Image 1 (cartoon, rainbow, N blue to C red):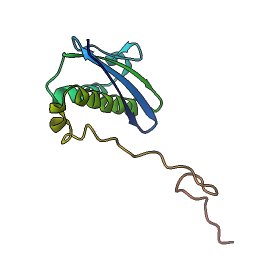
Image 2 (image 1 turned 45 degrees about the vertical axis):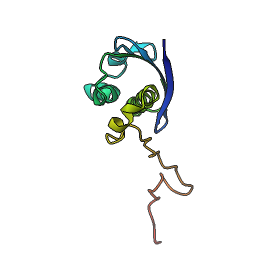
Image 3 (image 1 turned 90 degrees about the vertical axis):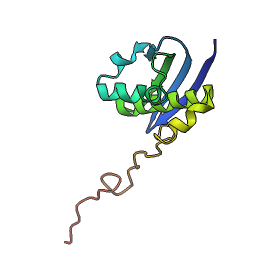
Image 4 (image 1 turned 180 degrees about the vertical axis):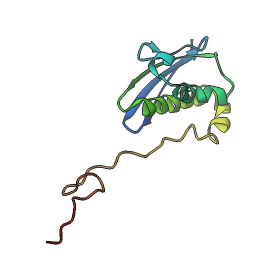
Length: 128
């Protein structure tokens, strides 16, 4: 039984993905992914790599995900699944790359600066 493990990251979310041949069961933090991710859009994001490569219901996925919000976690899971599929077979890379599923989104929250209210917002300026 071939087990592939990769990681995916987005914002502050980190997902560890374990992929193996199976019936298409996706488990996130010991819960079904449809129970863990509430909306249909997040369900689509998680399964997007399988739809692009026509691999629905062929692999079992076990995911441990921590940090961030639900959207960031779903996108971290998507990146992890995409990377795992590329490790299984290099034939999937030309399908996943143009869809943008192998790119780690580098956007992070900008840090708060000293002497300011937030990262860019300043305190109200008073002339006198």
